[in-house]
Amino acid sequence: MSYHNPVLLQESVDALAIKKDGVYVDVTFGGGGHSKEILKRLGGNGKLFGFDQDPDAQGNVIDDERFVLIPENFRYISRFLRFYDVRKIDGVLADLGVSSHQFDEADRGFSTRFDGDLDMRMNQKSKTSAKEIINDYSEEKLAEILFLYGELRNSRNIAKTIVGKREEEKIETSLQLRKVLQRHLPKAKEHKIIAQIFQAIRIEVNEELDVLKEFLEQIPNLLNEEGRLSVISYHSLEDRLVKRFIRTGLFSGEPVKDIFGNSNVPLQKVGKLIVPTPQEIKINNRARSAKLRIATIKH
Image 1 (spheres, one colour):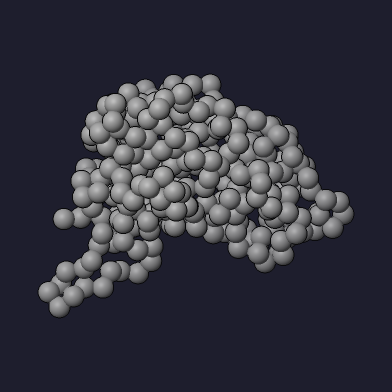
Image 2 (cartoon, helix red, strand yellow):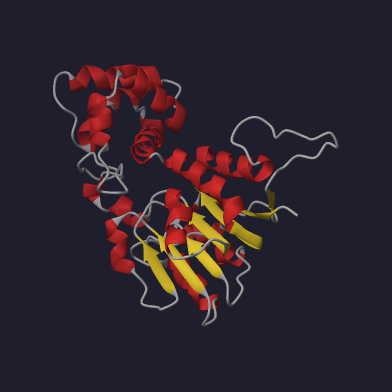
């Protein structure tokens, strides 16, 4: 589990209510922890597809004839499953966010702990890295992403500082960025604020919220009648989208009701919100903010 220690492993796989001969998808394959647990519960005729756009994850491919790894972004889930002649599935699991491996590799630029190139791309082939965002985005655009994705109240001041400094020299590493922003990092909140700044940039680099929305919108048409959706999120922006989509089938506004007062909401929640136990958080600190939500097709 050195690549990534899977969070809420048993709970998120239990949520799928696995049928021995079912077809399942793990859209965030990573180190393969969740996938291995799903395969343990599948019979000989079951099938599991994994999605992961990060080339590093290819090294964790599972040697099992029931398993196929698709090296693509899960926003294209329906398109790539159709390539394998799969139009309906019995369950899908998403463990959102960044894997431990991505945080621990300094040169990927995800971590606030190490100095590394400002990259943050989950897909190394994509054109925009954190470096372009920090050095090329307008002050207004920078302030907007820091406010929307980092939930930072002083986003305008932070953006102004970045733009002022990059005129003197290009900001290319995480340590450089941290030094530039030092005056916005009071000692008591330093770690929290820098984490929010990095989160905002990473979400923009990888279009994470757009990807999540596109993925969720495909789920009602993909799931079989008894099919399950199991989603683990790590920050309020993701969790709000998941919660709202399960409740309303929308990301904003309320569903339209017919003359009988019924609304066409495609999913319904299963059980209550699940969070890690204190024991799991003690073993794996990255589990502390995890939230698991489960849904099925509304009957």
